[in-house]
Length: 330
Image (cartoon, rainbow, N blue to C red; front, side, top):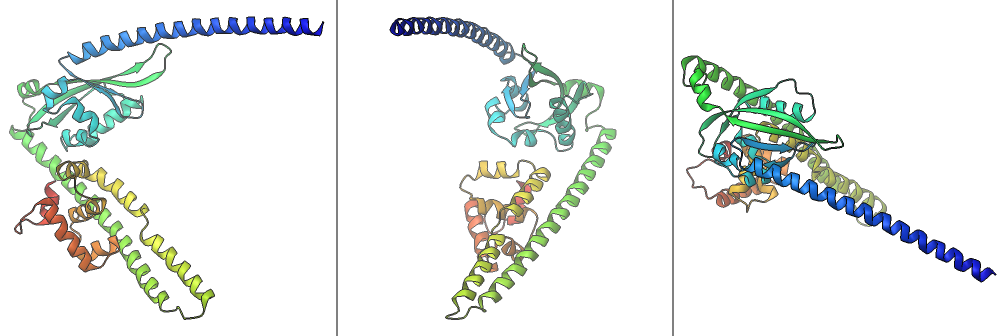
């Protein structure tokens, strides 16, 4: 009797599993249909966007780019793949006087805080020509209402701006351009001075720590293992502070805000440069002395001078070209 009941329960369980399997198959079929519809819709969008006259972009909610249309090349001279793969190209592309406005506009749009319908801004093409563009953004959502980011449409309005007489080759425009550039340079110099002060405080800290470390070493005495271990621990702690990456990471973040694309452009032109070369290049961009650089890199001034010579060779510079002048032109 017990055996029959077990068989019945087994058969019922098998039937239940078969029913569940059929349900999963139906869900899988529905999912396949939905995915097929989505892929077709995406393909239709890409076909339309790829052949659009305007430069189309799709920003994800985190601010990164999902899509850039091929028409970007006809406007800027750069390919869509270059914009997608280079984090600093957008900062290099937007005119320096318009970069802050453009960045604020995009960030506000992505955060759904934008109250401006459009923005006029300038770009510098691959051949360094100035072009006026107009950007409009619109939120992108899926069928369930999930936020997928912002679609941005950029139109080249250079001819329109020329017709309106609002480009800088007119006298009034020149005055505005000069004032804007002067303000930008003043702000940049002020921020550079702040960075310089920050680096000087770091170098002074390093100088003090090096002095303490060197004098602590003199306290070690033969046979006093307990005291020597404590001294070694103190020296190790000081070394950790000297070689900490926190100060550099903080500095690099501020430096890239002031000189966007500097590291990307330098790395693109000279891929052989090491992370130490990049640090040295940034310090030279701020016109730091060899002694100041030595303290920041925790090396001797002689080693810092050797690093400068090696960097010059990697950059292929002749003796007449100043390293600081070269870095200022990057």
